[in-house]
Amino acid sequence: MIQDLGGVDIYHCPYFEVESSGKLKFIRGKFYDRTPDTFNKISEINDILRYCIWIIRKEEHLSITKYAAVVFMNRVNQRLQRIEVDFKKMLKKEQGVDEKSLKKSIDKPGRTYV
Image 1 (tube, rainbow, N blue to C red):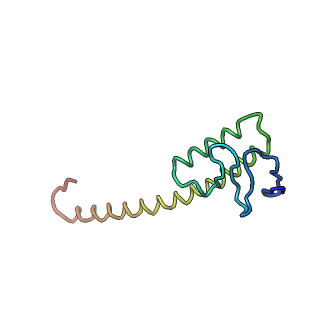
Image 2: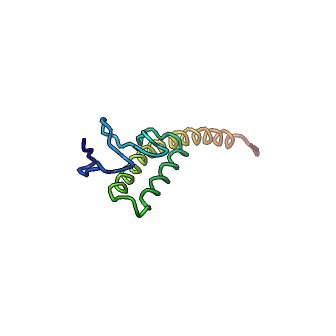
Image 3: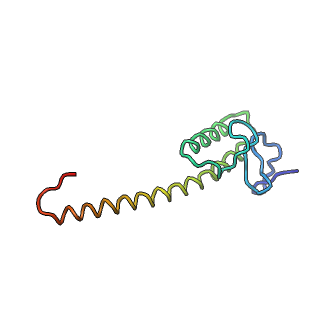
């Protein structure tokens, strides 16, 4: 069965395939059988992005393999954007607590040491 990715045939790609649900996944190496949405930790995302860069930089790899690696990286970056939103929520909450603490210390005469 020929796999398709944005109109590009990736049937002969040695590293990636499109699974039945339409997600791109690794079919070889350390990240075998993993899709972009399975990377949840920053360290894992760092490792997979480095691996994809390695695939892209290898001259002997087919152009289709390099294309699939770039697509995989873009899909992982979507996961990274969700992590960014989570961080933003956490920081807003922390900064709100700090702001309340600052307002309380301003209302008191004299110096307050924390």
